[in-house]
Structure formats: structure tokens, C-alpha cells
Amino acid sequence: MNEAIERAGCRYTGERKLCGALLRRLGVSGFLLLALMFGGCRKPVQEPVTITFLDPEWSHDLEVRRPLSAEALQEFTRETGVLVKHIPGPETAPDQLALTEGLLKKGAVTPDVYGIDVIWPGILSNYLIDLKPYLSSGFAEQDPVVLAGYTVGDRLVAIPYHPNIGIFYYRTDLLEKYGYSLPPRTWDEMEKMAAKIQAGERARGDKDFWGFVWPGADSEGLTCLGVEWQADEDGGHIIESDGKISVNNANATRTWERAARWVGSISPPSVTSYQEWDASNAFWITGRAAFFRGWMSDFFLTHPLAVPYRDKAGATSVPGGRVARVATLGGFGLGISKTSAHREEAVKLVKFLTDREARLNTERAQYEPPARPEAFELPTLLKAYARVYKPGENQGGGVVVRPSNIAGAKYDEVSEAYARAVHAVLTGKAKAPQAAADLEKELVRITGFATSRQH
Image 1 (cartoon, rainbow, N blue to C red):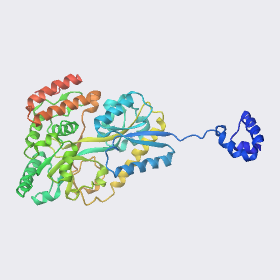
Image 2: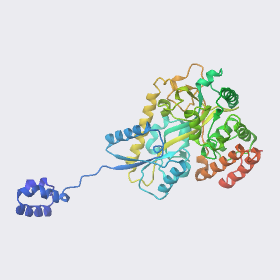
Image 3: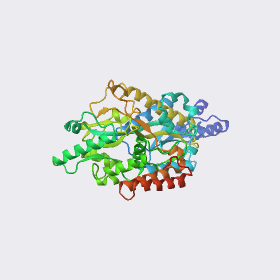
Image 4: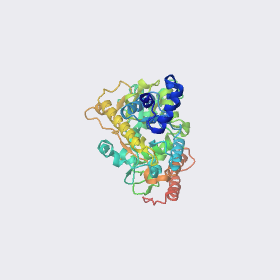
């Protein structure tokens, strides 16, 4: 009887006396009932630790990536015993930031791990741990430009996870049709090619065909384009790394005027209201554009979009100007909340996911590229196609970052002011020189920084 009591979990003296008295009344046949009644007599089974991962990509990513994310988290649980609750962020970037910032400011113990957009570190740095002490062994493999995007001061507040970069898509069938062997390397070449292809397609009956589509709405997408245009022509980076404002100069304003010239000529008049998906649909779904400035990551290089015009499309670096050929850095990193209740397990997850992604990228780099979309002179950041470069072929464009870290918590105001000024030029509501002068004053007011150029 005592052995049965011990097996039932009654391990303490008082409990044994109570259990024994009851068993004498009920008999051995009542043992099972007592085992259920006295579940509290057992030593509690330790529940596995559960951490929460707030993933802004998951809410709007393509279906193919979702099962891959679930597979990765299941693999992590098998290896560590730590469970992961994977929750999507809101659909839009402003809502994602608002939710993330709100949770972190409140000191919420969950989520533990956050997906951090490359433009958020300056805003969120006070609420995220410094990852350098935990991840220093992997720094050598990270692209220094990408790593800098997640570094505030000397603190690494997030580790790059899914870097993304601006890319230039082109219709391979139309380039061949109109006698072009290569996609454009400069904006001047793009203008000429777009005009010729557009005229030819319209002459053949497609009156709604356009040469070039891009996200020209007054939004963050326009800031991305604007910083590329300026950097291409030595017009500055909106705010330089030393905190000097660089928008009110002739090199910058010429790029705005050039883009305004596209509106209604090689780009639809409505392009100034296009968000990313509007421009994407015009190229990939309806096929009514020869060129499109979009985004690409290593993941999408090896998992091409399943869209109508995939087999007639190519990808290359964004065209450049007189001094540079660059594309804006985008994408997400992984950060850990300072108030996480499970920091050790959160660090394990971040290490696991980033190491796994690095391993997959190495494997992808060994693949032969798929037949479509065609790739030519891709940005150096995209490593999955490292083997496709032909002898003598250029390595494609470089990377430019938005001034989010230097602007810190003021970045949203900076970006909104910048996009608003450029948009006013695109829509004809303001002349470029005056828009730049007004913008400069506004950025000085917002940031307290000085200006960098004579004008």
C-alpha cells in the first residue's frame, strides 16, 4: 500500500497520512480515483518555456515563405525544447511600427523577439538589447553596410535577417523586340529605351502601355527612390553621417526635375499616386510597362514570383547617374526586448534563425539560376547568384541607406517632409529649387542639424 501511495505522488509526510487514511476507507479499488483527486500531491511537471516572435513580414509575405517560417520554428523547438508563438504584425509599415514601439515603451514582457525594419533602430534603440556580446562570432560574415543599418552608436540593436534591396525589373521580350541586348545601366539610357518601347507598343494598339512604373506616392517608397537619385548624382543622402543636411543643392534638385519629366511622358500621370503594389501590378500582372523599380532579396531570387509575366522578365541593378549606381537598403532584422522575460531563449532563437538563413544562402549560391527571371549585373548585396556573373561583367550596383539612424526618433518626420517636398515637384505644385530650400529649413527645424552645402 505504501508503494502505491508513493507512486501516486504523495511524497510528503502529512500527505502520506491523509492518503493512507482515505485508502483504508475506500480500499485498493479506489486508488485510481485518489490519484486523480490528489494530482496536487505530485511534484509539478515543468512546462516548456514559450517565447513570442512578432514578425512584421509574416502578415503580408508570400504564401511560400509562411510554411518555411513554420518549419524553421518547429526545427528550433526540436533542437532546444523552447516553444515559439509566431504572431503576425499589422499589414502596413506605420501600423507595424506603432504596435512595436507601443509594446516596447510599455515594457511588455512579450513579445520577446521583434522583427525590426531597417529604418527602425534609431527609433527603438533604447528598448532593445545590444546583441554584440551574444553574436560577435557572426559579424565577419555580415555585409558591413547592412550591419551598419542596425547599429546605433556602438550598439547592435538588431541582427540582419532578411535584407532587401531596390531592384530594376525589365521585360526581356521587349528589349529583344526593340533591338536592345542589355538592360539600361543609367537613367539616361532608361529614358531613351522606355520612350522607344512605349511608342512602339502604342503604335501596335496598346494605348495604355507605359515605359516605366515606380511608386511615386507621397510615402516612404518615394523617400527610397529620392535618396537613390540624389546619391547617383552627388546630391547627398538627405542627412549625412556627420549630421549635416544635404538637400538644397543643384545636383539633388536636378534629379527631382528629371523624375517630374517622366510623369506623363514615360510614366503614367497617376504614377504620383502609385504605392509599391500599384507599380508591381502594372508590370507583373497586366504587363503594361517595360521597366519597374521594385525590391528583391536572396529569397525571391531562388523563389521567383508566380505571376503572369515572370517568364518575360529580368532583374538588374537600379540604373545610376554620373557618380554612382546604388539602390536603397530595405528588409528586416531581429531584435530582443530589454524587458523580455526569457532573454536567454530569445537569444537562442535569434542565433538559430540568422545562422539558418546564412546556411541557406550559402546553399542557394551553389544553385544554377532558374531560367526565369533573367538576371544581369545584380546588386552586390544579392549573393544567391554569385556564380552567374560572366567574365568581364560588372558586379552591379551598390547600396545606399536612408538617414534613419542619424535622425533617430525624428526619422519619420524627416522622411515625411522629404517625400512631401519631392512629391510637390513631381505633381507640379512646386519648383524644385524652392521646394529644396523650404525642405532644408524644415529639416533644420525638425532635427536641429546644420546644412552641409553652399547653395
